[in-house]
Image (cartoon, rainbow, N blue to C red; front, side, top):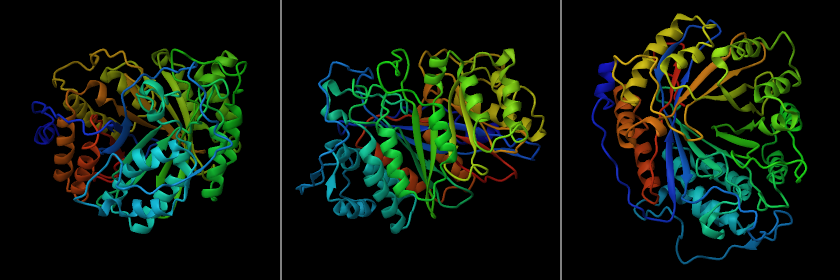
Length: 502
């Protein structure tokens, strides 16, 4: 395995990639290292996989500006008619290849009005075209490209908040926890199974035009309006769990009910969308911190109370959660920071419950402890996978093979430093499934070396069918912007063959 990693370029000196600034925008292309272990006694093996995340990032402060003049309220909204443009003013301009934006232009022609200039920015100047390029590169049929772009344009883009172009000092009135610079959107490329087609995904934080002001201090106006829009657009959603968790984590949106956390983020909810061939499916992420602060409880205690009070949960079908809570009570788990809970908006008996948490410990021993849930998971295939993970760990972080597994990665003081994990389970399962996101953006030495290794890795495993499209899309997305970041995911599967890339 180690020789293979050398072949892929992980063992070579990093190559520095310089990207010229061709526009006012910057994109951060983030690949995360994700390890999925198959628990519950099922035979599994570790295989590297890749998730491609594109984050639209721009410079600027992430501080709130309470003294800024108030913007037009999100409701009522005065729409304005589209004006014809002499030429495309978007940040992505590629006259050599217009095919990838042909469906975008068709959808754009169908849009008669925008709800605000900010709506127009997110669709026309910022993320709409990036989404179009990814859909085309993933070889989505034109009717699906049209479905997904129309959904984004009409149902999502109006709820992404104020664009930086209209703010003083190029700052955000409501910085989102979605990205490190506060941009409320993250686009993802899911590599799929074997040589099957990729799936495009994206995550957002709905943000109101008055978010962060005295009118909407907690950004709690846009969320209900966005959910109403989804109710009209995605009629097959199951909302029993959504309604429960929304009410459980609710805080009042006034000075008495909302207390701004000046030292940390103030995000309360995320949404994510998987663009499958059959439908657009939604997930929701809830943050426990505000209720925890209001009740004087820990984030974990709030999460546990929320889960145990959810519809259809019983003492007998929460064994996986009990296992994780038992692990969380260990002294070795005392430093874990619990971030959020996610659910699928489908039948609750099919939905996953996902708990995201961060550990500031960065030794490989700490990784093993969490991935095995404190040794409670004894599946031999899991430990075999952890050996492979150690090789990737060493290669990505430029660690010598003889380095002790008790040695930490270099200290980084960033809010998103450390290692992010999640555990997920469905009702009735005995053990949770753990995933790890290796933070290459904080600890790897070179973006270019990671991307190069990614390309070679897929070619080596004969997973390169869509790699030329992927590389082409990345070049087009990077050309107008400035910055490249990368992180690489890996997934455990039941066979010894590469099956799933996320």
